[in-house]
Picture 1 (tube, rainbow, N blue to C red):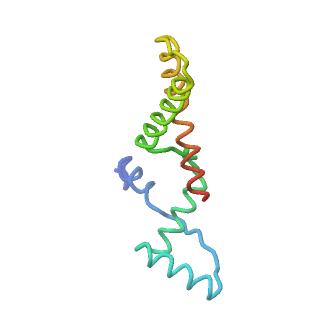
Picture 2: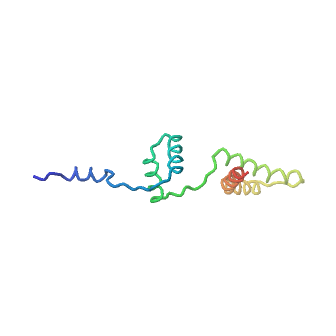
Picture 3: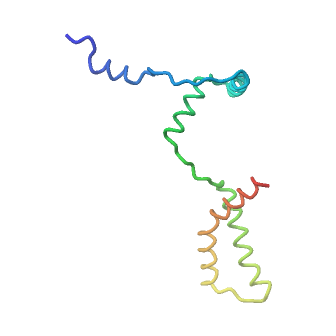
Length: 121
């Protein structure tokens, strides 16, 4: 009769069994303690998360909100429709449809660019 069956071995394999550590000076340790206290997390859990995020990086594509994308889309549509109308040009249904297709294609990228410009300012 085995002391450990497959189920117990599998369960124990998921336990954290090894420590990964580093040495810090007093100022670094105080800064770490304050940082962790501000976030309500232990230093060990913070360091674990940092290590795991380095081992399994999941680059997140920057995104703009749906609302900003729609606002930018409306702005693009108005800009592209009003200028020809104010200069006296006639807009055919085909031109209008083409403008709408272009707005739909470009609004998300332009919204992201707008968001990044606002974050830099």
